[in-house]
Length: 288
Image (cartoon, rainbow, N blue to C red):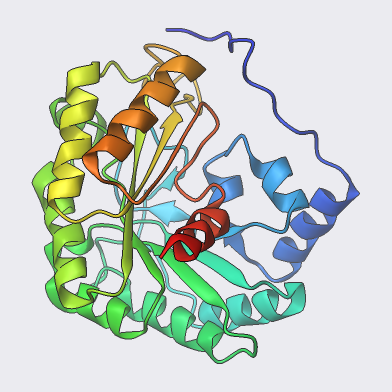
């Protein structure tokens, strides 16, 4: 297990603005994946008013070996007021681009699609044409759930492949590599105007040809945007870091991805799936 961070990792320290936003989320009983997944960019993003809202609670029904989010040990509840509270926080903060993700809720008949759709709908009711990116679980392949989310009209629909095919059995035993690719493909088929997006975390023991294969698989399935970042183990009990990918190698992967036809790529040690989401999306719009 590799534990010492290399020299190129620099993280911002929290200041008063970060603490103020933390307090606001606590007051509204809101979860963010930034906090729950121990994202290294939390301070930087909170300073810049960039948040990824986590809906359907903060406890996941799956047990991915790399993820720091709480794992379910008992029956989970649903908070009916959660979408309305997110709308209020978005309004209070004056956000013009919102990222919404969720824990995986395999205990729900629709995988949580109704809550995604309601949250999107309420945010769209706010003045100012707020743009919305959703990062969804695989919904266990339920196409009616995917249709329900897309009908609410998010601008970006993201679903993370997370890792290469070979490592799925060890890292994502309750997920399916091909099912995730199919979901992205179906999303584009159901809503050709939606931007599709995915992410890979690296440093888990993958090899370059395997990463290239995963990127190629994503493009074949009509994935538009790609982010690539370094895996950091949330604790000693999680899957260990096998390698720290150099900035030079991230740049190489970025060039490979662009060569495969992705419309936008963000790659680097501290990149996460929702990192600089607004800039990526709006930068793409400027190029159309």
